[in-house]
Length: 432
Image (cartoon, rainbow, N blue to C red):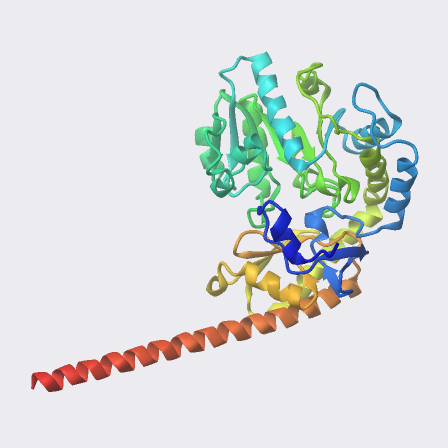
């Protein structure tokens, strides 16, 4: 059976518009397509493959666990699930964990738990959930409705009620809105899909204080910022604010599907037997890999290197930008960076993404105005330099194409003006 890019159009639901190549294998920060072409990968599966592709330790862990068992269901307990739970609680200071299979499921569980706590403690009138414009919390109907991007929820109504969206980093708007009917505030410490927008530190602190004042739970969506991505194991550590519920996924099992919520004994007690569940959540396979990842990524030396390499990547892109002036800024933290397009190039991040792929560099976008970079946490300074060199080739093509388009438009406008002038002169001559 011959598989090509066309096969996708033939057999897959058209939710995605993937690149032209068909990927076949990977190693470290590199991917290879079916023709053997090599790509330097700055996407890491959208911040999932934290240890890169085909990592020897991850492969060994998967093989070992696969030879024992893959799935047993939550009717029983198993050693791997409990081991990862213990490691996460020891590392973070939270006391309870609930495992799921993805970030969306983790956020769904966190939102349901927050509503259940309010229902049990106060009543069904305390149900409002506040989140922020440009946020993204997943694709389930509940989580996509809480997310602050209407383009993802439009057409799926009626959506769940009791959800309010406010401007991000605007504490005055929150002060005017939050009330004793608010059961939870959900936010990203750095908005990912919204454009790699960091929360102001003072904003985070005041959100925490307002939640405490109104007995509302604070939920941090750390699906993308967690597991070392920003240079600490979870971003709340450098943010200096501890949420009541933390959601995590993506890099937690280095590519094996997993998600979780972390919380306290008091809050977790409201999820009594039968109130929530997940068939595949906490699978022995995912949790075995998760334990391996936690051991590797949580080491201070590893996290320090993530921060150093993130600073270096940012520095190198800014240096490159001195030549091409495509980006207005590079924002983010650690190895979660957003290259924001200059106003004259607004809406063209997808064009740059395709040009990068043409030059064998894989990058992401975060909306039309931001090129997003989430490389594997093991990327080296040399690989960063190689990546920036490839990006330079793409930006050179981009700027050239943009200039040619401008020149063509100018010539068209000039020709149009000339035709109009001739027509006007002819009309004047005729009138005389």
